[in-house]
Length: 147
Image 1 (cartoon, helix red, strand yellow):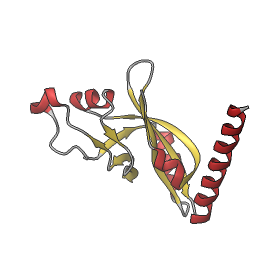
Image 2: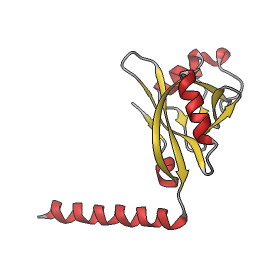
Image 3: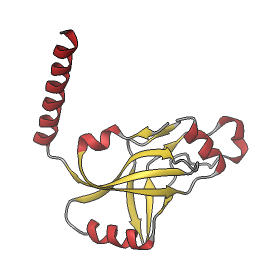
Image 4: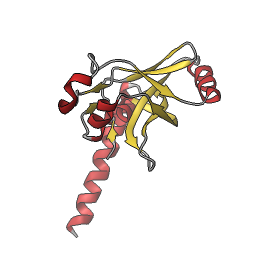
């Protein structure tokens, strides 16, 4: 089961995607497995030579109430290779580029992974155009479904 940030694809043009590990505590992993995560307000920032996920809300896991972190929206470090981090830092210096979390999932080995996208913000007319295209696609699907 993956937690998807639908808002990211609506508000940004995704240029490249990267897979990053994420540092979580034990109870946070259980909450992620249960799908108790909100990525809508989350974004990624660079601090020194590290990339951090900020604003991601992972609800406390009830059975482990004593071991939960105090702040469910705390910053969490992302794990990438140094070369990838340097390349991302170089690209983020370009005007208008940002890192946005796209989806949080578990890979086949059971590790929590965060797919992040190097993105450029959409203008209002781009968003309207995307909505129009989606509506046209939906209408075509309805027509073909009826016949």
